[in-house]
Length: 429
Image 1 (spheres, rainbow, N blue to C red):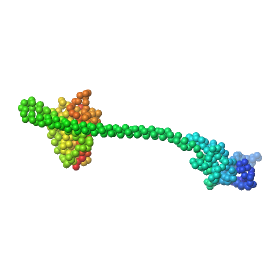
Image 2 (tube, helix red, strand yellow; image 1 turned 120 degrees about the horizontal axis):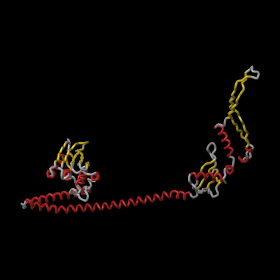
Image 3 (cartoon, one colour; image 1 turned 60 degrees about the vertical axis):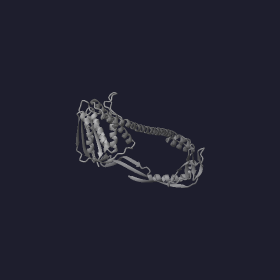
Image 4 (cartoon, one colour; image 1 turned 90 degrees about the horizontal axis):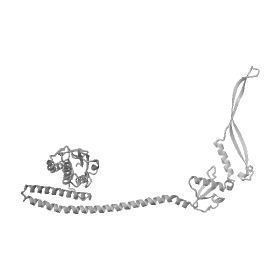
């Protein structure tokens, strides 16, 4: 069975003077509804005479339901209305507030002394800590004892007198680290600026030295050239003529190296002027080959040219690009084992509106370390303390500078003891 029971109570405020603090004889009617469920279990049987049947309950289960949420809300509303008439000092004590606030502050890692007080409609009450000042402007406020409509006449006012000192102490370590790292950054920046100016000054000194050195060398080189030409017309001795030819060749090589040094310095400063025009790269390659054919023939070498690119017209400087391929061909011949005839292969092809020149040889090759620095100025691979080939390490540096000035790229692949392949890419017109 299922029954609904109604229970009524007349609650007098005089019956709880210690809690409510009221003296009126008013009563409040409270009605409570309880759900009562009863469950019986029967078992059939026979009467004592054994003739008639009898059904008797074996077990009875009774359940009484608890308050619903609506019922709880009714009670809460009644108690809140009754509590409004109770003075604040009877509802709260200073010790209770002190305990709750201390516990919540410790949960948040704050262990500073604090002060508090309770205001009623903006006026101080007697519930306050000993040193609390209601006139302080740095307080925190929160409403307490709100009614069912969220309205409260009371506010808990909270203050930390040493708040600023706590905040300063809390961020002092962070401020110290910030200042420390700022000083490090400033020191690093100062050192970087100093190094920058030092390098700039050294670069200017180097540039001035190179300019002066190259111009000073040009004068005696020109004088030697004039002297060789003068002696050539007078010497009849075969040995003298041969030695004179050696002097003339070495003098030309020295002049070429001086020009390379000067041109690289000018390229680094952006002072070199390229005479740009429409040129045939195939003609440049053939002209460079013609210039080194004599050197190749002296060592019984061969230079195979296979110009397969269907387009070869580019915007470039004839003189500098000719020197680029002369340098590459000259290196291919020079850096071949003396007991082996040099073999050089040159081919061209077009890839994505760019012409690619591939130049490979059967020379001594380069190690990985050497290959990484092959285009650096003044770098040459060494064996012990002896340089295997004469030179100043300027050829490939000059090649790289000129190709990049033409908005192209140059790279190399090499295997020690097998040979080296250079790839030059330039944009077609």
